[in-house]
Amino acid sequence: MKEGGGNRSRELFARAKKVTPGGVHSPVRAFRAVGGTPIFMASAQGARIQDVDGKEYIDYVGSWGPAILGHAHPEVVDAVRCVAGKGLSFGTPHEGEVELAEMITRMVPGLEKIRFCNSGTEATMSCVRLARGCMGRTKIIKFAGCYHGHSDALLVAAGSGALTLGRPDSAGVTEGAAQDTLVLPFNDETAVEAAFAEYGKEIAAVLLEPVPANAGLILPAKGYLHFLREITRKHHALLIFDEVMTGFRLAPGGAQEIYGIRPDLSAFGKVIGGGMPVGAFGGRAEVMDFLAPDGPVYQAGTLSGNPMAMAAGLAQLKVLARGDVYKKLEKTGKALEVMLAQEIKDSGAPATWVRIGSMFCLFFCPAGLVIRNLQEARRCDTQAYSLFFHSLLDGGVYFPPSQFETCFLSAAHGDGELELTRTALRQALRHKA
Ligand code: KE4
Image (tube, rainbow, N blue to C red):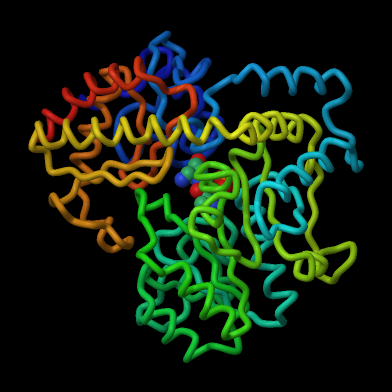
């Protein structure tokens, strides 16, 4: 069953492996978690994506989040076309970056200033340096299962004991880089209280995905985010929300709007670039003004604020700001949820689902298990997910090639896509019953 890509994908993969590590430019694309040959895609429109062998899929990855309107949305494509002929990059300030920064700070309550960069990794890495620089403290708390990109301070795994400092989670990350990161279980207030009791005055910030989406999809327990807001305020540490996935996806103001929390700093990416490489971070002006050239915390980027990326992001956010997109995403998400529940029930497959807005995940785990953290997510049957994934592919539906990722709906997913998905889902779940 584990096929994946067709002949042309296999040919391209063989060529790619000769000139690129693992044949891919980001590890998850290599299909190592599900087996088979990675699929090389050729084009995409709306909710559908076509591979180099001409097979079409309904796409629930959406480039890992950016394609919230659907692929190749005409207003986004036209915006890029319009600026491309005027020069691709100036390395100077320009009007587009001002317009997008104004748009973003209007859409996210409490976001006073923002700085653009080129990826979510840069955005979270810069938040960490800024927090340490403005607070004059060294330690950062992060949570197991939350992924914030691949900067050294955040490629850190939990220490051996509950309160032991982090250990490198990748070769090449030094003990020195990891020693100031404390990794705690998500949704566990006691662990956070103990960390502040132990390290309180050394903790510069608490960093988290407000809705973790890199261990499958995990919802914050009721009151948990408010608890983090209060305990960071009490100990004069910053609260940093990594909204690279959730920002402008769950609501115009992201998860912080949904849960009514104002973090001190936020990291963004994906949706704000409309598919082009963009990251951003922002927050209260008194914190952001510690950044160079005004302040002592250095941060920079050759292509930061790139005109094409700004144009794509601005066009996408203008469509989102019209407001009806979020209503449509919730309507489609609800319809999908009803379908998932019915098909899982009918199939008897050992699976459950989690959804928030246009983000959802199927966990292959003991029925009824509520997954609240990474340890519980790891109880999932990844082999079952792999068989499910490939069966869906055969049925023309493209889910993330890993149990520990999250699916995304776009505004282009409609009844037709859901019906085709139901057919493929029914077949795939029968495999797992
Ligand atoms: P990038 O550096 O990949 O733009 O963003 C890193 C990042 C930061 N924060 C969160 C919450 C993220 O989800 C990500 C990246 N997300 C993954 C999907 N799980 C990108 C896919 C990939 O790594 O290829």
